[in-house]
Length: 463
Ligand code: FHN
Image 1 (cartoon, rainbow, N blue to C red):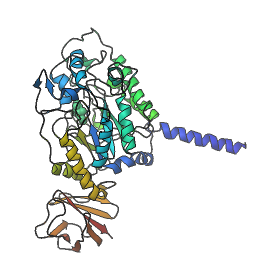
Image 2 (cartoon, helix red, strand yellow; image 1 turned 180 degrees about the vertical axis):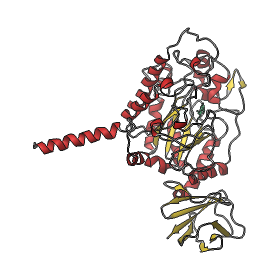
Image 3 (cartoon, rainbow, N blue to C red; image 1 turned 135 degrees about the vertical axis):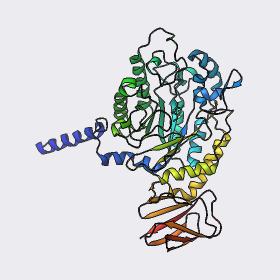
């Protein structure tokens, strides 16, 4: 083989290696990053799933409701139970049906979600996969690999796969909870039951399970770490950079959130769900994660995703009936998209994996709205207009989508400040509308009745 060919072959193989390790080295070019983030940015809407042993307890302990609101996935911490007491009570109530995973995947598809992030392990420490690194897992306890079942079901529906993996662990006997004031632990303030704890052993365990999840289940699209405190985070707490390098090595195009850290450079200004800051150095993650909260304005140049419950708990509770309305959920999706963000909406299945009827109905309502108006959400960017009195807007190239919440009683919808020439105007739900320049901006003549009281979308093609 001629010398020049050998050089060429070596060069292209070197380039391939660099493309794989560049993100790990934080040297990823912005065009490579844009390519890696493209599907996620276009998706706009994902389904979050909190499911684990806490789902069987359903917010009840010793026959009494622990509370009627707030995260029941935290029940072990709320009742201050040690892991053995907790496991003995919870495991008998955790009996997944044969087809639970297919029901999840079908609902996500019907809802119009493009990706699903589910709890491979929450703070309780129980792993849903068949783990060789632990006996507190579905493999040892149920002789099933629930992660396999879920991943296969999601792929069958063509959905992207994400793991929510807790770095906090209320089960592992080397997790040194006394090292953090700010992070929760059921035994907080008590001496370690086993005397001393070597947190480095926990870090090695954490890495081993993450490696299993990112090596044994095919392509994984999202890693949703959770969560760190200002007094315990990053390399010190979790060997975070090593974990991220491992994830990029096993899954070169994986997208990761910012919750291995709790510092301003990683998009955090304080503790608490609204403690996020609108800036993110890519070496700390790919997107920031407002929780239960929609930012007032977009965050140009920063990828962000608001995660939210449908009631007030992430894990299932039979005592929490504070369900948000379909109107609130659909308008949240629109509001978030109009500001250039993603919406990760949670369901909390029961101990047998079945999904509360209220969540099924809400997801199907969102899906029905997206069936008609999906083009005004998927693949769009933040709208040009702020504080539209009647709704929100999104953009896609030379197309502007007007999401009308409050239909004008005089059938004249004014778009303040829009003076572009309009080539065509139509309702996505069907029906023509007429658009003409007006004093304060474009005036769109609309029918007397809105096609959809929750939100009707007008599509404007701009010259
Ligand atoms: O403690 C968790 C909580 O249980 C839930 O998982 C949320 C979801 O984003 N994250 C943590 C609280 O910030």
